[in-house]
Image 1 (tube, rainbow, N blue to C red):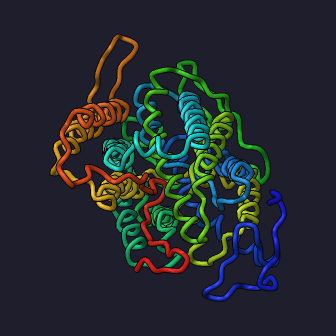
Image 2 (image 1 turned 180 degrees about the vertical axis):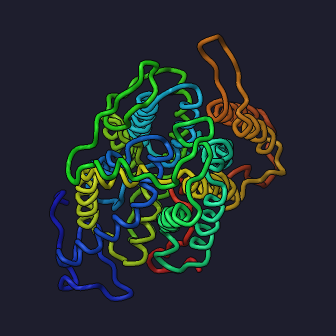
Image 3 (image 1 turned 45 degrees about the horizontal axis):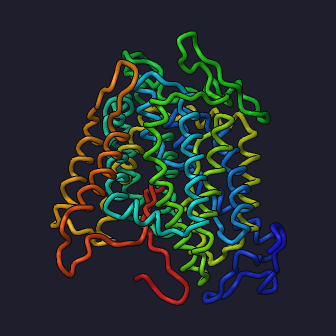
Length: 484
């Protein structure tokens, strides 16, 4: 299939309720552009919220998500429709790096290495099949890693975001919960984005009715008096231009966050490595979901999907952007429209690149009040953690078997409690990194020697499909059958 050649079907008009548009097909260019715009809206909220949380430039993140999406589509030969938005899997690692004195360049350097490792995994899977991934990362282990990544972030909410404006945080969190659970259809899938708009507007109203607030901010550790919404940087930002270049203080802290070259430090790289496990699970789940919806066998493209996401992450972080992953939100958009044309994704990618060239847009995003981020993250981080439990439930992991229960319990406590193992004055393992290593190594060690319960499989063999990049768990209806 040619990379940029699609067959127009259904006379270019919207297909019937039981018909689909396959990846190598399209509708009229007008309708295709409209569907591409819908994909932009689907990925929009999370793609720029996560860079803000990680302290990276949202303009650059949006722009590079478009570039990464195009690279992904080329690498998978247009067989797997997907948008590559900012990955939430790296938020915890970024928080840990900043906690240890690192800056944006350290974060992107560590993430770039994680992307290279995902590329290597993709090459192995492409050459030898996905069995090696299923053996190394069964659902019991993957669920534990996703869970400890999510719950390890709880102190970030408690110490960094929530104290900035507790009432805005509480009201924003309440709105996100209501939007995700009560709203129907597309609105529920963009609950994060709607919550951000709600919290932003509420903060502006509070500034007008109540006045300034005295609290800590993202740039201060002691309480200061300030308005919740500060658009001073928005007024001076240009309507069109490339994102700014990063500048750093003499002691290495971020002064201006923008494009920059990554820097590499072993201790910080180790903190990011567990995120690769989440990306493997996410991409495997995405391929599986698309295969079910289109009725096509895509197993041969699993390795390519890993490579595509890894390359996207490497290219994005090489210039200071944020890591990428296949987006669950866009799976939902495809399920709603039954249009899987990759032409729509190319259009979405181009729109994202153009948005990234609007500094004023980035300044508005960067001015998101801390209380709003507190409300969003208190829900989001918990959801990431509980997705680990969802993996266990869906794959019927048996915790009456001590070989599953005991090693994972140790890994979870270490990861969530941020336990440290100090090797020297310059190197230590802690939190997510140490918890992941303990969970994987001890799980496989004890299962190598433990007797298996007769007639009862210790674990399911499929790689599960969590969606840490999304707080949504809407069912996707495969072609020819219903999940309801």
